[in-house]
Image (cartoon, rainbow, N blue to C red; front, side, top):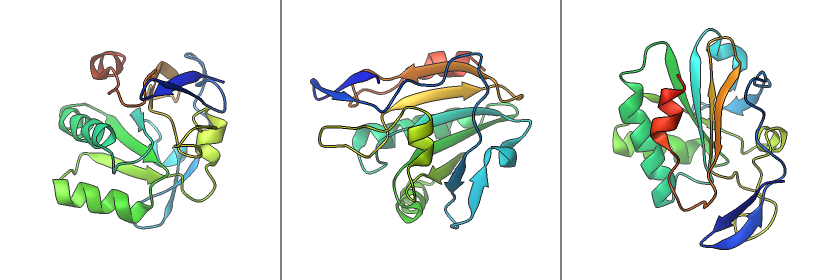
Length: 165
């Protein structure tokens, strides 16, 4: 269980992020067209998993914008923006913002991705949503960088995530 804060108040997650050096576990997440994507959909690609509570908050929206901007210049890399938002909300946000360089994936159906990766917030006002975290994976599916953002209202360390690629 990770201890993080929301507005300076302690909250906890369901576990710890997967270890650097381990393989990213397979997942089933819902795409904007309501089809299901799994890790195999991104085989051979480096991945930046930008995980956050909701695209409808300022910090979460800023992270999607920032990674969208960075993603256009990344070779053989896909940025996955993962939350428990409905796919409709993710699609609406990216459409309104003109963001085309990231892939939105939703864990709204079961929250299994969040639970499996120690991301689910278990107490406080955001209980049930994902914590803000980054997981970077190489082209072979090995985790090369993680960051559990200590204060949910803060943005992740973009430079460290991109440097891990």
